[in-house]
Image (tube, rainbow, N blue to C red; front, side):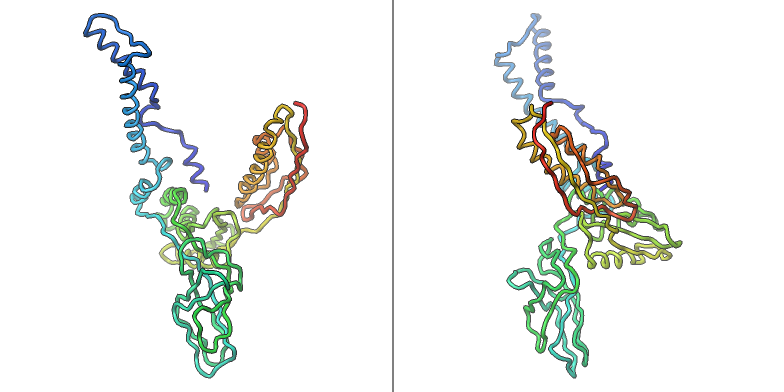
Length: 384
């Protein structure tokens, strides 16, 4: 999420000038000593064990607590810091609201045991499920298998919202829960996708950042990216290009977890973006998953002998660093960069790294690097 990175890299601000509880204590003690000295005419310095100093310290803690609320109140007006209901109220200034939970969708193919002379109706709400599984998909439109034909494809959505219904492979929904006469089988012909939890703070903040681009009717990149993010909260990295024929817009995207989007998501987003209230009438919008450029990881790392007491922790940190690198590398248009991998492994505590893969490689603006395998070896301890 590039917009989120921009927000996080903005300078920090403090609405209480960075005051700490020690600052409040020091000021209160100084003010007390100055006031009492002025009133009595005798210099006063409170001992560290003075009951009056303890009373001032207790009051300072409460005052600092109140200052924290003041600081938070100010920061909730800034997108960098805003969260939860505060962020919802910031979004309202743009006419936006947090996206609710959404149900996964797919297309079910209903097949008769044999062609019939009359049409076979499939009622709305007809359910299919994975055998021995409790998540159901129900049809969302009444459809019929015409006389003389044997099958029909019907849109369906999961009966529960959230991501529980995502990523079912083609053919897994094979149990017809609500029997229909003469119906021999049912199966999903697309991978299930689109189910989402309530929109996260980061995703909503990014949409707020992108929202000004939606004002234009000229089809700028920011506008298409904003609408792609609005389509579904599971949409992650988005790249928009127009380097083909005039008026042709190509949008490539990944899911929020970095995975390749299934056809159901690609088709749904393409249809959504082709709405005349979103795209300029002169634009031909095409949506696709980015091309995949495969790479592998093969490295051996060593640990300083002086760090032997932390060797197990460092090995765990290195494994985590390799995973973070794979996630970082999976961004559309990001070239394969082994230097970044070496940097992350070293930052995890390794002394040095010997790497045979990956190699530097140009990925291209419409492609994404995909890790196909990894071999990470610990070479042992070495002298500093």
